Length: 164
Image (tube, rainbow, N blue to C red; front, side):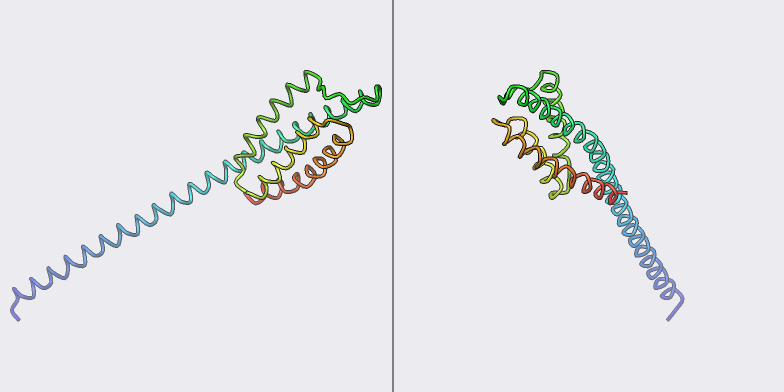
């Protein structure tokens, strides 16, 4: 072979290698960029979930405390009059409404289905306690939401620890 053929073959091989190297570099850069975006999105989701659960812990505690105050207020009236009144004191009624709304919103943001269902169960039991038609029904729901709250408190802590 003469020099011109060797020069042409060398140029062809060099150009092919250069194109292949550029294509591989671009592909690797694309994959790295895609993985970085996925990791960023997962981290944002983890941060959102962590912030939601931290806020939910505080709001659930306030909500359960207010529900318990309402229950005790009704029980005091019942102990004095031997008559069950569905009336909730006005200041507690407003608090319950606000806390119930905020808690409902936060519960819907929880990504863990099992935990979200338990939170719904807690909120339902607390609402039923406040809407009870008699003291026996109220006490049943009070005991139920108290038990659920204790277990949920632990589950919320576990879920939060898993997000760090």
